[in-house]
Image 1 (spheres, rainbow, N blue to C red):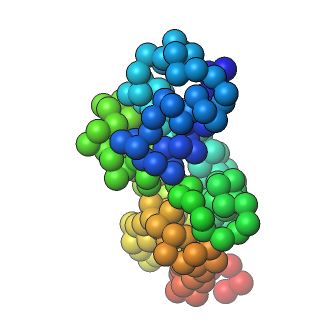
Image 2 (cartoon, rainbow, N blue to C red; image 1 turned 120 degrees about the vertical axis):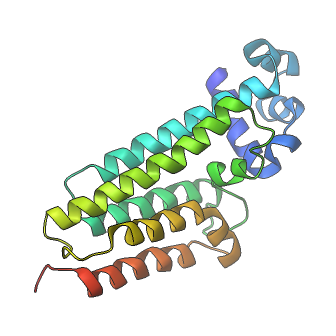
Length: 199
């Protein structure tokens, strides 16, 4: 039951935000009583903190595997984009943006009310993602994929900014295509300016 509650809570947090979430909505979706949800989590803060922390941890685990692997920088960027696409389609199966899909982006809007553990998880996500991407760009230089004069911090900053804004980019664009264009354009620019393969 706890996993079902958490799964529904993610969708409802995306749709209603923390302040708009009600145990009644969760209970209605699951066909259980509100008392059942209170029994497992006590209150909304406990439930949401657990959901947000686990979500951030799972996302970081997947992105750590992507960014620390042996693939090229361009394959790592592609992997990050495909991770975004998978989550996007989970909440927007038609391919048109009907619902928010980035829980991290959504919860950042309410960071003042979500609780200290959740706030810490979101802050950790931002710094850890930045660290992973910088290390990935550094590795691309070490491997000879990028030239030694590649501005590592600038490249990483662009990639992290796209990842951090992914939910809003798809919201503004109406589908995933704008986000995909941004990822691919950064890959092309970096490759054209600093790529060393084939030279």
